[in-house]
Image (cartoon, rainbow, N blue to C red; front, side):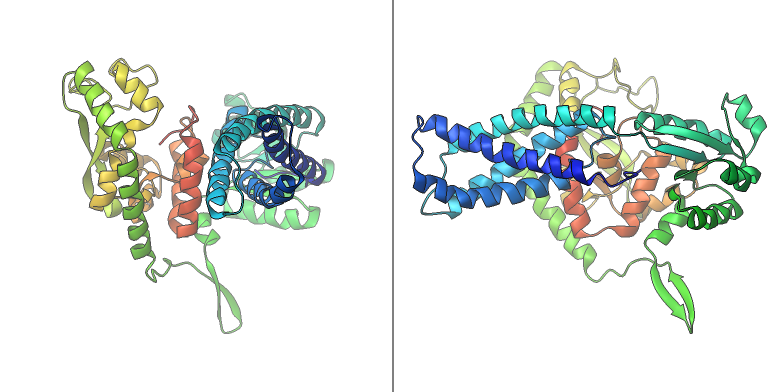
Amino acid sequence: MGENTPKTMLNYLQMLGDILLLNGATLFIYYLRAHGEVLTVNLDIYGIYFSAVTLSGVLLFKFFGLYHTRNKLWSDIMSSLIVSIGLLTVLIIILDYMIVVYSLPRGTVLSSAVLQLGALGVWRWILLQWERKFSPKRKVLIIAPAGEAGLLEKKVKESFDRVQGIIVDSAEAAAERGLTVLGTYNDIEELCKRDKFSNILISGILPEEVKSKIARLSLKHNWKVFLVPNLYEIMIYHSRLNQLKDTPLLEISPAANNGKEQIKRGLDCIVAVIGLVITLPITLLTGLAIKLTSPGQVFFLQERVGRKGKLFMLYKFRTMVENAEGNTGPVLATENDPRITRVGKILRAARIDEIPQLINVLKGDMSIVGPRPERPVFVEQFEKEIPGYSYRHLMKAGITGLAQVAGNYSTSVEDKLRYDLLYTSGSSSVVDLKIMLQTIKVLMMKDKSL
């Protein structure tokens, strides 16, 4: 859910502090390395760097969500800071090479990055505590079936907001689940006369007549409505406006290709080749470590479901003992799974075991960005339990995806499916680039998954 009121002053304060600390750290390190002798001409030339550091820093911070932090975990904020400072440092080094007249010493740039990260970490921690303590909690009314209302209530509270009340389909079903509710769908209009609501969170599986009633009341009472979308609503989200004579229409159809697949395939190959070359030393060391510490093959091949349900063999570094599922059959790995080897734990923690999937990308089985491929046995299970699950196979599977950068290990299969369908219906090269950059942050977060 988004912010309930614009926090313009806080954003300006965050931005001002960021600019001062980013540039102040660089000047302070330069001053120390110059033994206190800073020539005026150097300060004049620093104006070029000031513009680059300020503009790039603010844009990177905005891209990684550092101006909307109230509902984020501290680990997420710090990961965003680390990636932002890292990318900013790379940009400044590139700028150094482009400026012939003058450049900052590499030691100054790298030392500045360390000081920037430390100063900004303290600054953002203080701001976050202040924001959570003094900014008012949003009051949220939940309207959902009793079976889903409890989960939504938990998520609202975890987002540092307050549940104003719950409206369900059945008071009896709510009582069985231990939920305290204001009433049922039939009581919505009466409750509006009694209480004032501002933020409404509704389930996508509400009856259409209830959704229509809420839409009508939201216009009348100026509610801000947040919807947990179903498949139909995700399709509507990416629909195009059309008309039949003078009647407005929403056109729901697959987006025209127009060479998009060819562009995506070309970018996939370029990124995969670069990735394999850069990670070659890691690959060699990993293979050696696996062979020396555990009997069996270096690579682990596993059947997965790809585009249009086509099966392919996924490549990974082996992180479990040989023939790990010989006695158990197909099961998902757990956090302290005894089948995982000592080296395997390190590989999984650092996401190194995923590197061989770049080979799958070159083969055309996968893309860099797309829905994560599942095993056939689990796909068959999910297709029976979750309507619309098969639609995620309209695109090639990916090493990373929207569900991976927006969700985490505990994200439900249903919510991951929603992210996959949103990506499938609205993918583009720009979206892929954003997800790739966000994935850098994901690699440093333990509670995220690839």
